[in-house]
Length: 458
Image 1 (cartoon, rainbow, N blue to C red):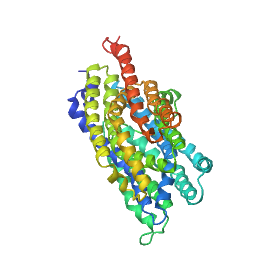
Image 2: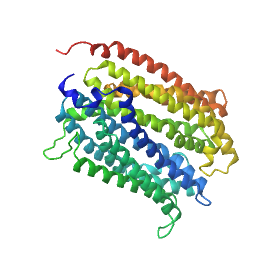
Image 3: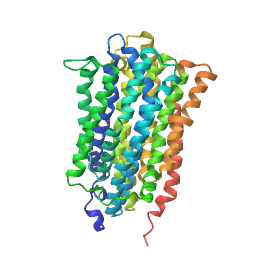
Image 4: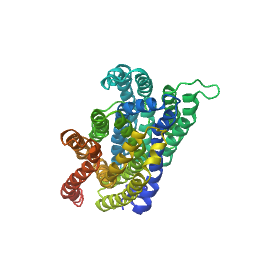
């Protein structure tokens, strides 16, 4: 074993315990992250008189909110991939530079969403003919969470930087502190408890960004005041085009990949009636408790696979992938069982007293959940492509999952064949198609890049 690998557990530790130790904190962290929007929606859904309107407003707001998260996480994933690969190759200086670039790029991204928050929210809501209280709630929520999104962007950049070094505990704590702050202030600001004003949906937005602010402050203290395997410094720092290019080689496809969900929701919302839009909004909030642990698993897998790809250790790459698939299948199977057996109880958390919404939601949940198993496999393949710097393969796979397959299938079922109640079948059918493509792309990777790992370095 080379000297550069001896000091890093990702190069030698037994794989399954390594994955568990690295992924569990990230899985917990991502599950906590899902609480932000879900808790907002649960409290908003219980606003006297206007709960259903507020819930509908958050459903319409969700695609733009997801777009912001896509840019945030995508850029940070690009940094994570570059840092882990540079560490695996033993290049500390370039790893440190990538981490510093990540924070700067997070600030640039913030400026973009300030502009969107100021100028794009009203035209966006007008696309859906939102008016009255629905428009008021939607504009309040979106303007606040977009214009103050810089807090979560900086925190996410630092979180992914630490994860690239194998540190999963502090990123988990960042998310936990932010979510707990949000949960505490949500009811205080939404309902006006004690000395706090009653702000309804605006209160939910303020509680969210305040939680993100607290998490950001915590992350800044850790990255600058604690000794870490990565050093972030702005002294003598200069932006390097080559580093930015390397970050976005993985980061940009990741941004597009995650943004696809926003465009998919926009397309689905256009095909659904108001009840369907609310059902889809509730589903996406609840399914995050199933998918987020898998995304957290990927955060544990990505640095391990990236490190060993940089170290040219094909055996450990395959071992990490097999462990990831096994764990993902367990998570998704549990989620599918819950959505099949207790969909009514899941929907009731949002205080829905609308019988039509309940009937539509139960049918939708029991159909869509069959996408969970093929999705588990596709998500692990996407992580492998990202970790090895093959961002374009991850992008292609995500396009087919959430845009190229699902929207045409949904349109065919609902508009051409006329089976509007069966539109939810588009989700599992799209996942099966994407899984077939994922296997093809993986086989190609194994026959080309992975074969080269067996060859000695000159």
